[in-house]
Length: 339
Ligand code: DAH
Image (cartoon, rainbow, N blue to C red; front, top):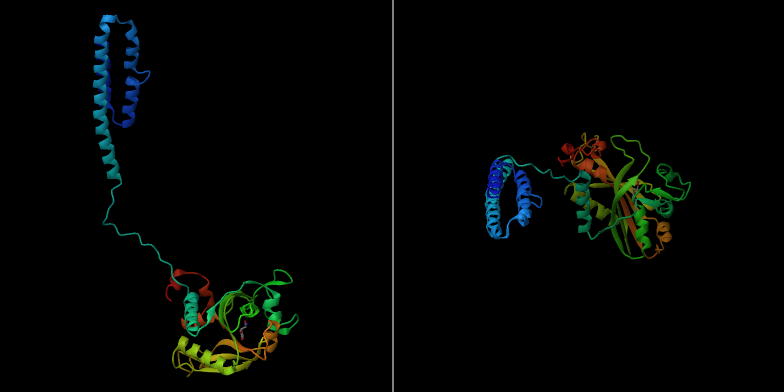
């Protein structure tokens, strides 16, 4: 018995010393001390040992076990340290390497221009509101004095969802939503996306943005329209900017006009920017048509108003001197981050 134990111990210790991973070490522990391990088998044989020898043999088995366990523990500590060190070495961080740059996005020129417009109008007491892009024909046309078969509808007769629903062709539809709310006075701008069946070129896109403006109050005259838009033009293009109104036709305003500003590049002398004109057209405007007010339950004898519509891309292109609208939609960060 003594010899057998001695042999188990020596062999176990030798194997333990040779183990080079924690896994192998565990395998040895199971093979020797586990339920079916060599030493456990010896213990099971104790019943055959004479009663008077049992304490002695028991002591021997325990000593063997302790010796093996101690060795196991010793090698385990050593291997753990080794594995830890190897892991640390593999994961070493070179703090002198250049950092990974996180790429920060950039505001789109449209957004920069819109924020500028909003800042100006909020400063004049306007509220910024929004309306739906998918719109009833009624709001986009009918309630704006553009009945079915009206020739003005022709150039905007575009993306229909069904007979009654259309992708809005102008933000003027938001005027109607605001008037219908019945809360007067109104002083709002409504920025948003509009859709038309236009071919893509340097100045056209089937989807672009407008900023609508509407003021409804008592005693509003064309002088208010002019003063407001002249002040807007000065804030946007510079203190020296002058404005000029050319008669025009929009079904929902009467009278209607297009507003030009003096070219901010040449101050009106004529240059490439303004195509030699000295003036640049920037918006459509007019006094809200009495019939439009009536359709939205506003009494034109008590209330008047003015409205305007600005092409957002047009402002962005002008302000940042971009000569092709398509550049705004390509989302090339190298282009966008210049503005
Ligand atoms: N909705 C017009 C368009 O898309 C622009 C416009 C003109 C809006 C005159 C207005 C306005 O509010 O008064 O061509």
